[in-house]
Length: 186
Image (cartoon, rainbow, N blue to C red; front, side, top):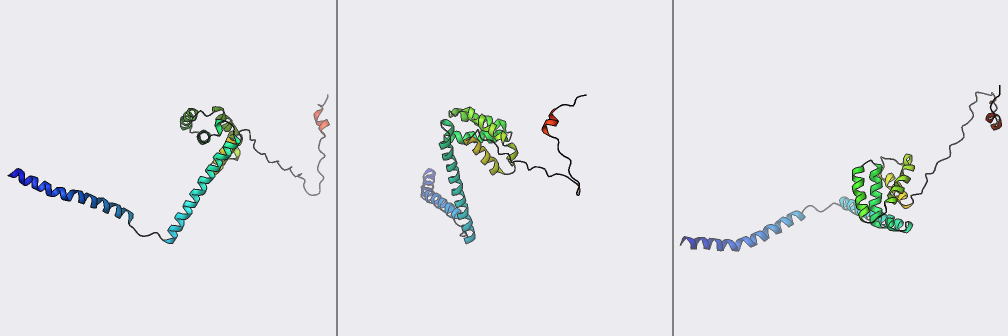
């Protein structure tokens, strides 16, 4: 008898468990989605953020296409460009452990190790022109060196120093190159 009563209770519970679980799942997802609708200002910021993300993705795609056109061989493949630029950037920032782990991946994709060396050599030639506080400066320079590892930094010509004379005094005549080159004899 007791066994029959317990079976009856479980039979009744079966009818409530499945709909109860469905109701709980539905309420949970409905509560998760509900909320105040975004204000026009928030909607404008979200749209601007999406447009900025789309622009950034297009810029990256253009950089990969530029590298593929400029570099013949596997160094121009997108995976080699991405990993190689990352290795060069990490080496510049002295994160050598991470750089070597990325270099292992770079090698597994069959990318040429010599291109990483050439790009890093190029980056060290531009060292003084890179602003470490501006991420974009480093990224742009790494990309430029990846595309053209033989690039040379542009050195601005130093302006000629103005003569330093006091008042109306005439400046002393400059020594001629021939006189400066001959040693004085005793």
